[in-house]
Length: 334
Image (cartoon, rainbow, N blue to C red):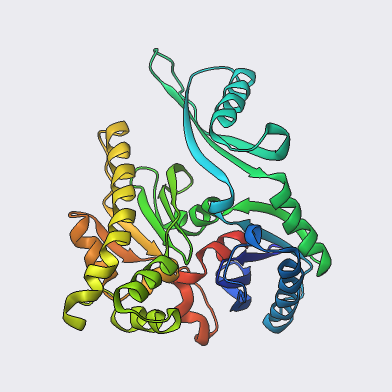
């Protein structure tokens, strides 16, 4: 049993979980009262957030003082990069150059990590090294460490969301038959092409459930709380409200679908003898009524399934239906 718990601080909710194999030993979920990620909070809000975390940890029954926490993909640079075959020192230099071109922060203000996903066994001239690279502003990572220190929690590890998603769903996949994972959150959407223990590609789309709520509010002239209620009640049901909800939500959903298609096409171009035939839908946005059939139609030939992180786990009955909102927290706890 890991001597730490998983802590996922999202823009609208906070999830934490302690696991023991396939058993959920302690679990909790609470509201993020500020409706934004930690990186966007004021100092006063960060201090108030520590009170939220302290209360949630106590109420969940977690007695551990160590945690693995996630940083939102909106706050990091996270990408699978391809390089010509080269030595490790040369690769390190190439990655640094790539980050200098891609990350809008000076090198002295970011922390980087990278791992080789795939290195060709034979070199005939065109092979590539596949590397997963992550860069996070030091200021943001230090904020997480400081907040945890304030509540008496030691951070064992701080990582972005993609590895946690891969850790959660990888066991039901294979590297020969990878799947796409669409993690639809409140402020953004993660798209991952994942195998059993391999990450093929990923992309972050900065639109999520809140963008859908805003579209409904604008289309129907509603306050945001009522628009949120409309979204939960009607979703993408074509036979409700004369189909106006589908018309209102289509632009954002099609934007996400478009980015997903790009990843699927890129995967097919690189692995010509393979293709992605399954999409695992997860995150709070996955509950949207009608989303699964909509995605199934839009991605003809791809099976769309709900990504339930609790599918093969023993968990308290009142949390059983919340599997789609705990994949990151669960992945962090493993």
